[in-house]
Image (tube, rainbow, N blue to C red; front, side, top):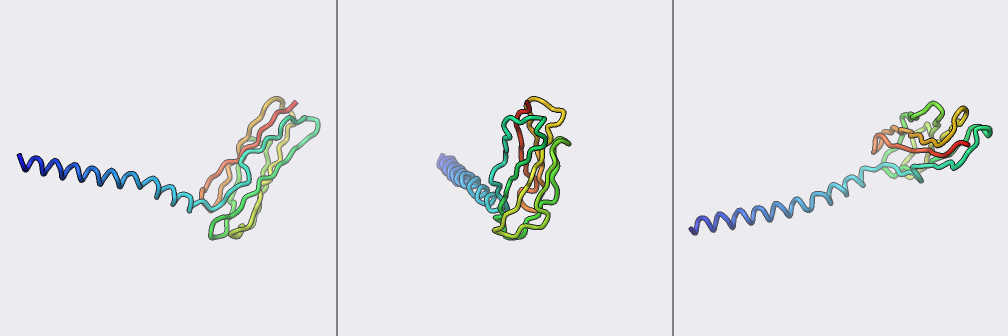
Length: 138
């Protein structure tokens, strides 16, 4: 009977120590994730509001800051629609400096609500990031 009690106590202590290790794991993962981010954008969505087809193209600009330790380069940007044309800082952005993503949207031949995504590819972290433009065409 004594052996059974000792075995039970040993298993309980092992389980408690294992549970304590699992509680601290998410904190360390979160801290390392924050350290991996290498840029931040001033905004991730731009709402053009209501626009008119007859007024032609509209454009907006997103700015970002390199918060990493090495130069950040945007390697490519793809748009979900041919009516959306991106332009961006082509040179690598030094740590602590800012860059831009400019977006032109053509409402020609369209009406109603629109929502387009831009996939931004970088040499930083995250490797792929999404920006969104939206609005309504009257």
